[in-house]
Length: 351
View (cartoon, rainbow, N blue to C red):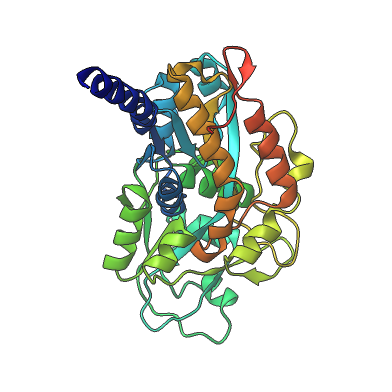
């Protein structure tokens, strides 16, 4: 009897062992604040389907995410800004940029009594250079016919951390103003001449909320979640368009044609009457060879998570004020995920 009990216990341990091994699969990601709300939702939904996989995503900014994946202290990075040539060289390995959703940067403002506002790129650039300092400046008034704009000082609010949101915003403004391009410049982190800084989209949103007359650039999701008013932007077709899932999707429609070996493409300031002009993809960045994860089970779990987010997970994008990937972009992303390797072979998704 004791022998039979011993055999039974051994059998149970053998049966439980794989489950324990699966329960130990943990994935660590970090980076962009821009997609953080939907990433947290994806993690929650995916873990409810796969309780054996634990995923943690830290919203620390695109710069921190790129640093983490470069140093291989995280399993995947989130970034709104594609890695630069120098950053790719520092990484010492082929990196893959996977678009996850498209989003928008909006000029959120705190202006009592003004329920709607129109702006264009050149005017917005002058505001953030400090050249337009009052809300009743003639250039703003000209864009807002019939509105009473107050004689109130403008306080620009900006990101203090390395940020993909800053990358998108400054690249857009540099395309609208040579003066901005030659003085402030473009990048994940620039030296702003005026205003007040905040860390993350959350920090900039807080500055805008707490400062009458403030205007700051934040992701549309944060503006919506915090009920902060944001301006409509004049696009290339001369139409004033507010950021929405539809207007962001309109900006991304031509993305497939631009995608070659790399899936990182710019979609700001695109043609189209309905296109919102400060739109961008956000990316998950991994190495093409997942050997740095040191565990094949982790590699399989990561590939499965990426497949889920870019397929079933897309159903959640629109309700969270992001634009889902178009069918053509999804196919491109799916091919890139299929190209991820482990020990020279494609990684099979977690079973």
